[in-house]
Image (cartoon, rainbow, N blue to C red):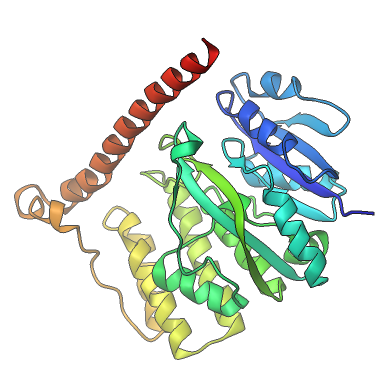
Length: 338
C-alpha cells in the first residue's frame, strides 16, 4: 500500500486564492492523498468557495477565528496521512511536488528525515515566479541548517516541507501564541526532532506575495512584535540545545542584529531584552543601520521617519509590481478564453 499524504490547508479571508490552492492540491500526481481545509472564521466567502470542492477526498470545515496555528492543529487532528503537507491558502504546489518527495522518502526508509523543495515567489502569474536558490537548498544536518538560517537570515517557505507523521508528532503542535513567524518557530522544532534534511530538486512550491496583511508581516503591531520576540528567543534556545559553540553564538548574534530594526526605537523593552540576550551570547548589538538610500533622511527628519520611509517605499514598489502583474494576468486569461 502506497503511503497516504494529508494536505492540510488553513484559510482565512482567502476567497481570491483558495480555489487555485485547492485545485493545486487536487492536481497532485500522487494518488493517495486527502485534503483538509479549515476555514478560520473568515469574514469573506472563503468557506463558501472552498465548499464547492468538498468530496470524498476533500474535507472542508470551519471554526471560530483562532489563528492559523490553531487551524493547522485542528486540520492535523483530523488527518490520517503517513506524510503531512502543509499548504497556506494562497500558495500553490507544482503537480509532482509531493510525488517527487514521497519517492525519495520511500528510498530513505527513515521517518525522521525531513524533505524540502524549491520555492519561488509570484503575485498572479506562476509562469514568471522567481526561483532564487540559497544555501539551504541542499541536504543538511539540523544544526547546519539552523546555523545557515540564522547567520544568513534565510528561510524555507512553509509548503516546501514534507514530514512523516512520526516526525510531526515528535515536533508537537503549532504554537498558538505565534501571531508572526509561526512556521519559523514550528519547523525549528521539527528540525530538532529530525535526523536531517533532504532537498528534492525539481519539486516546486509557488509562494504568493500578498499585501502587508499577510502573517509574516510585522508592521507596527505590538501583538506581532511580542510574538516575534518570543520566536527569536526560542530560536536561540533551540539551536543552542543542539550545539553551544562559538559559531552557533555568532549565528545567533547576527540573527538578533538583523531583526533588531523591527523593534528599535519603538519598543525599548524588547530592545533591552535582545541586548541582554546578546550579552548572554558573549556579544553586543548595535543601533540598526539604515540603508544608504534612506540614511540621508536621518539628520533631516530623524531616525523614525527615515526607518518608516525605508519600510514604506519598498511596499509601494511591490504594490505597483503586483498591480502590473494582475493586469497582465487578466489579459493573459482573456486571450485564452477568446
